[in-house]
Length: 260
Image (cartoon, rainbow, N blue to C red):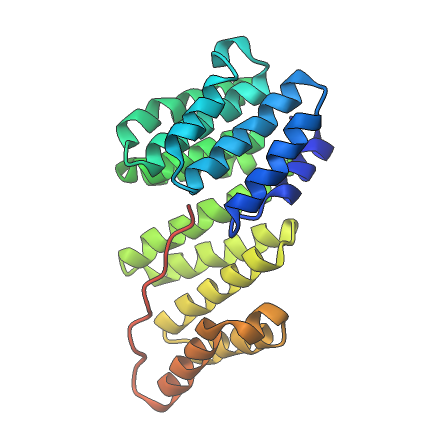
């Protein structure tokens, strides 16, 4: 496992709603970092932020500056493979991303970098929809009992995307169970936004199951939080569930974006 303190710090520097600010934080941290392996790991996150900003050439250039992953220590090597894959993936090159994700997964497993191995399994589950369940199972198996700081977030993402797959197939009991598991996973490292989104998604599935009263209990708890009070989706779901209680059946749930 990577240094837990360093892993926690990297998680804290990320704001996925503001990749430009995240990029600035990681760039400054890398410039000040004397340890070569840590500096390389920080620069991989600069590349990830550049990809999220659609600066794909800049992202590849950042990773190119680190050299061949075979010559890097395990953690920056795995992160380089992952972020190279994500750059291709975001640019539409899933075929180029897949072997990089596989290489990242293989090296992470061999090195005992559980959180990064789960991340790679998560990306493979997205990139290979026909193998999604296989890679979700692989990620869940790795995550079981792990204390790696990266695992809760990745486990939440895996379960959320699995829930959406079940929802797409109208398997709402399994979707709700997956979403409930995502809530529990995100609560292991409580980031208010991810916990909030997971709880809203769980309530969404409960309405689809025809359980509006249970959904409303979840949603009314959310309205008592800062994020819930300002989230129009919560108000809309409350209205839909109240309507469902007055009707013979509930309306179709809204479309929700997957975790990426």
